[in-house]
Length: 160
Image 1 (cartoon, rainbow, N blue to C red):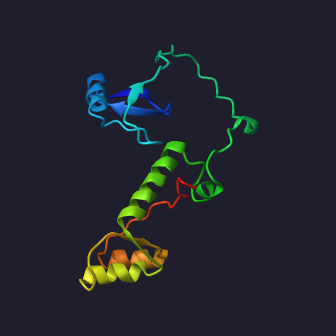
Image 2 (cartoon, rainbow, N blue to C red; image 1 turned 30 degrees about the vertical axis):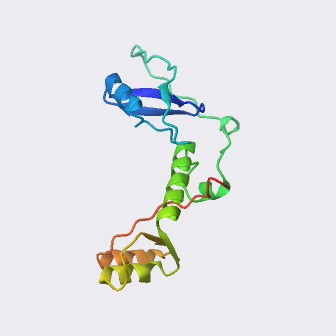
């Protein structure tokens, strides 16, 4: 596997892992390497620092990072509250795109999510993509009934 630092034509930096350099070239040429921030497929390899092996010496303990040096989070406070720590910007952008796709392709059923999922499972309602709210107990009950559901972090929309 090879790790590359990548950059899209709108200057977003990100990284990717590929089988080898030929695999990266083939995927990039086919437009299959996509910027996680903006979706641009005009992606190129960026400059990287070389990996240089260090001589084995007695390891000194790493200094603890100073709180003042910690970079402030660039994400909205709602996203920080829903995670154990700051969410990487690329993951946040991916979740925003996922939300947009869900809203575009699925029906919002609000607090009736569990009941609508049951109706679809029993054949009383047309099978389709739905999203909405369910308590942990409702989700567990659905799973016990053999109804597969998933949960994704619901981040603020990309358009604000």
